[in-house]
Image (cartoon, rainbow, N blue to C red):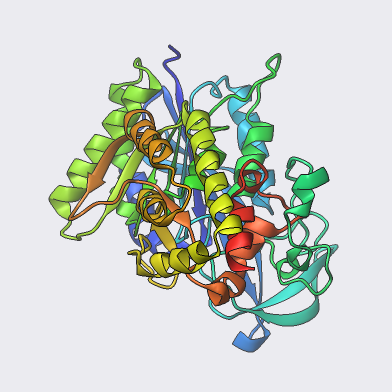
Length: 451
């Protein structure tokens, strides 16, 4: 077992004040160990313009290494401060770790006020200007207001276009799969809602990792030891599906997340004390000690945090898609099932801390649907539950009555399906295909249910 470990923190602009007040001091008080490299990628928002109504926004990524100076004081050692997109920053970090032979065991943690299947803030009605870089000048082209119903990150590329898609490699859409995407939500359409957003969706982030977590002379992905998310509602079924290709383990919240649950000093000390052990034991120790410390210091109730092992997720997904196929058959051949299912969904308790975001516990949804179905799937559901409990969800920290550890995005009615455009862009945008949608029939199920 390699006794070196690298830890990457991906920190977004939306926690700047908390970063200065809480996170930053915590980094300056952690113990620094020679066999643990800690890298910070800080995605910072810059506002330009003297008046609020004239402001526009761009981003830059600063990259730091947590190190000791000559007097033994913990410092932020700047590695780069000229990165202008998250993917450019990560390519630099991966290259830096490979150069120093620190790429074999890597943990990745994202810190942001984020939600579900995207990694960044819930934008208020922000004035945004698309800008060009001409020499040392910024030239605004036009001014628009954007209201986001999910959490997005606006970023600029080397080409200077604020809305240019990053060069993330995604699987190509062709044949019958392409027909499952709705053209009206395609970014090819000049009037499309999705075209105005350059959001860092988890599907885009995981695609990038899958393409770039590679080492020389190996054809397979060098998986992360773990991915830890501060997203509220990270424990979506599709998020774990996406990360099953790039991480051995994930840690996240099914409901509201408090970023302080993932205590920086606890994580570092757990890695150091278990550095000679397998990644599973490191993750179990991190999760258990973070939960213990959080419970001793906090009084918040209704927290649902999970540690998930992703090795067997492909076999869970076979069951998932079989159940979804049976739901589609029920909808197609039994008209009364649709009305009962929509009514049942409307009565399910949301797992999201935000009552307006329709995330529901996947087991609670499947159980309700099975009771209503003309073509039942009780055996498949029991096998799904057993595999989830025995092979996927390894540990949970639950206060009050807990859910199963996995949620699913599920609109409660036709209006919600059509109006939550962030979700439409995530699941149906043909120019940035979602690998979960490509490898399941879930988007087809939503379309049959509500259109």
